Image 1: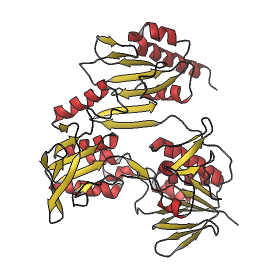
Image 2: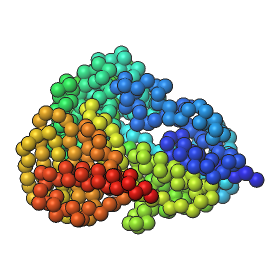
Image 3: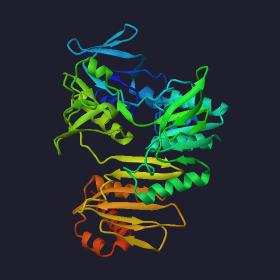
Image 4: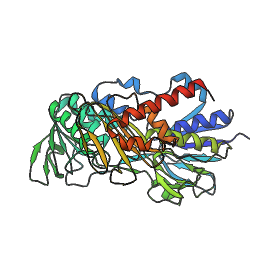
Amino acid sequence: MSARHVIVGSGIAGLSAAEAIRERDASGAVTIVSREPHPFYSRPGLAYLLSGDLPERRLSIRTPAELRALHLERVHGDATCIDVERHALHLADGRQLAYDRLLLATGASSIAPTFEGAGLDGVVRLDGLDDARRILAHARRGHTAVVIGGGSTALELVDGLHARGLATHYLMRGDRYWARVLDEVESELVERRLERAGVVLHRRTEVRAAVGSAGRLEAVETLRGERIACDLLAVAVGVQPMLELARAAGLHTARGVLTDEFLQTSAPDVFAAGDVAQALDPATGESALDTLWASAQAMGRTAGRNMAGAREPHRKRPPLNVTRIAGITTTIVGSVGGADDPDLLTLTRGQSERWTTSTAEWTLRQSSTDDRIRVLVGPSSIVGAVVMGDQSLSRPLARLIAEQVDVSALRPALEAHPGAGIAMLTEFVHARERGAHAHPA
């Protein structure tokens, strides 16, 4: 009898799992259950849809022919219950789907605001394509927008709404943008570009209440006593895994659905992957969440192979995030927040000739362009990097970090000549790639 594979969720983790299953099992049934009726689309691409740089039809990540070749069954519905003993998934409309292997790829949702007036028409979040369409509809008839949040999604909303012609206010809780990820120079670079474009920045404040009449948003009131008239309030204050289905089934959960290194949950034949999965990392013995696109894709592939009979551990790779903030293409890879660690050497490069030095870090302040590189070097390997603007080094650095390439022989020269550190690393990358091409594996 052919195996029955059921996948709950149609994001990149679910799609990658389906493709991996089909590579190993040509005849088994693969069913994908999704609340969304849309074809598979790029969630990161929604930022470019909002800004007008990408039409909606270009969001598709597989062609119709590629999807037909997978022989998937798509079920539009809301999964409400997993009967782990009888191996059955229940849907809200009463349907039941029997399974031999089940994957939870339900993803994460943005955290809902709790301030007064959060339910007014005009208060929006960006969780999917329907949300993007709703935001664009508001933008077409609106004049002023307010955005709150501290990460890349907040800036994507700022960029998109400003590009659509709305006067845009950005509220930051702290002194500067994304302080837990970017250093002061990088935050300043982003903020300067926003202000030059006409975005109004409000630092050290939060929304106290959204106010309106007849159910529609008219303004926001801040904790600092400001009142900003607006038609749209976009909220991006973090995400949380969608755990309702897992918890109802009695699966072990913490911040996410707990899995072993094979992405198997506490229930037999039930796996989890993507933003919802808190997977065990055998290297550290810890279970971690990872809510990035590339990680979800990799986890989906591993889960799919294991559902189809493999026994492959998930190898956690350094986090990799490629985004666009204030119009600057930015790659963030690995751990980038440890400048205070005495074992880390921080090297930066911009477009000026003036270097400043401190005990923990060498910083180049650029003036003519918005290109910037920051690399954190540990005792034996590179642990993280931020690449803003020119992306020529982003992929090589990502490979060095992921492969934990030994650079200990280079570190004394980096310490002695920090001003030339990025140039040394660039030459190291080029020499390594020349060697790989000369001696292919």
